[in-house]
Length: 62
Image (cartoon, rainbow, N blue to C red):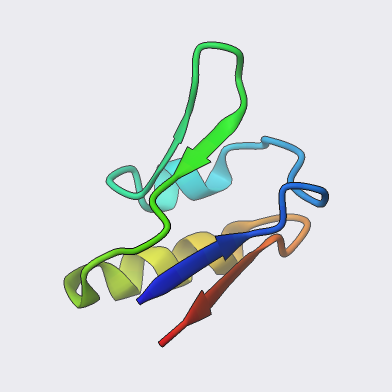
């Protein structure tokens, strides 16, 4: 699956990091970094991360 994060919307709250730590992380500056693609086995966590995002910056394709 492909994971898109609208970085113009993202406020780096980090809720996605708690939901899917294998896909999302905050760098040393507190900025979000993420994998552009993830294995299907991570779908539930990625969907939870998208739902947890306070600004709905995460979308999933595929």
